[in-house]
Image (tube, rainbow, N blue to C red; front, top):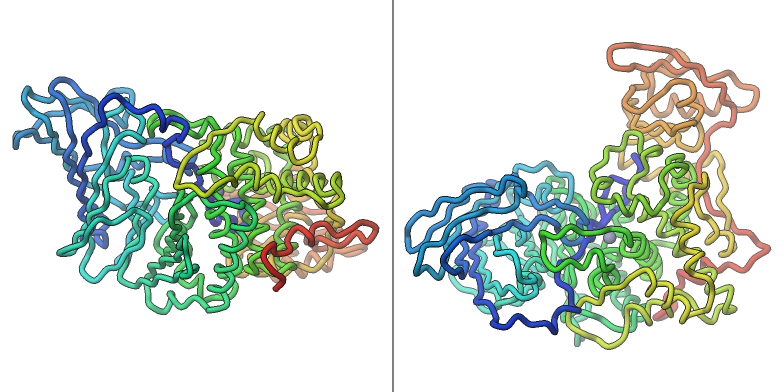
Length: 638
Ligand SMILES: [Zn+2]
């Protein structure tokens, strides 16, 4: 999973809400004695523009007391994020008679009811209301007047007990007139505006959302086959669908590069389900055979927005291997009610962050300089995170389910879901170490072949443990990888692990010139980045999104949530602050900031004379340039 606009108050990172579907392939051999009859679900999405979906289920049941549950722990979101509060209109019928029900007093996602004698099928009617704001993950805003993303987990109930791999569902969907759709879910027939899908397991159903809309475009990426890849786009306008041909070609290269990196695919076909709207939540959520990728309406036709979002699809697609096919034991739960354990998210998300960014560069979606700017930003942000002195990286993974929802204020002290960006640093460190130890003969590419490759298969899940990560690394090149990783996961050290840059022939430096990435993020996110100088991130109106603890500004009494009103006696604007920072350099005057804290003003003086500071990566010419080697395409030279 990836969440745009989170990660550092400035950043536009895409965290995947990448938890994966519950099913665990290891259990597929253990069949229940008698296969269950399919539950039928018909979803009426014709009122999606009014933010309500109607679902009608026919659930095979036996007489007596039963429980029904609503999916709670959503794959890829790594938390209990099923939108139970939006489940409304719940009614049950047996042989046409209304049945009473009672919610469990402890488990809000569970309903109790009694099935009368002789009844074999329970009818359930549900409504999903969608008043959600455009933030969060799949429970955030998903529908506009022009489009909708149907997430099946939000529209079903099931009897707990069997693995969701073993619960068959036959789904149908009705869409507004004139809407088109994309999905990885196999279709059995279509007529009179209703799509009937093939009977699949509940696991596969929930793993296969449907993107539908009035303004729709399907872009085939590998028409030559045999495994097909598509970008299915629904947007709030036809104009937004006009992805440049150059970008389409880069996505074609992405498919080729994933084949070269992993050596096998674990899906039948793959669909990027790309939503372009300013009125839905912006994030990416991975699935085995598709990804739910949601960005702003003009992302594909605006050069800056397209660049800033370029890492999203490579990240989500990488999860098909790293997260879906190979899944940490604690995230490979048998159903949607059992809590997930996120301790290996630094592999699930962290390695995906690393591989996703490498693939973004290898496919040409980023230039080499854009990759370097991104890496410098990651390094500098984590190196200015004092919260690492109390919260080791491991705890950001262990506590993922609470950190995803944390506000940006005090992020430098709280830490965020840092297993994404710091995972990038750790896996870069691993990759450069492997390349050094083997004189460039081996790399993380070999790890991926061993760990994620093998034979082409349809979707399946191979759970893993920490030990298997260590053992596979040892197959690539023997080393004390357990200590290597634990040293980086469990440390309370004040500095970020930057060994990957040192090994790779680069170093992080700071100067007065913002990178193109920083300038573009400031412009598009309406932010001012003074993190590495006085320790502040502000919006362009002066709102202080974060003040880095122990920075110059923090030590003078500036805190998150305050507003910067004036700089050296003049009303704040981003340019006024930048010019004051320049003027204060060396023998210049102290900075005088007027800040508003609630109803109260105060003036603070910053005895700061180092000017503006922005992060860059520069070459260390005394060492080979391994970093550039890492991002070279595997398939061909561009
Ligand atoms: Zn992810």
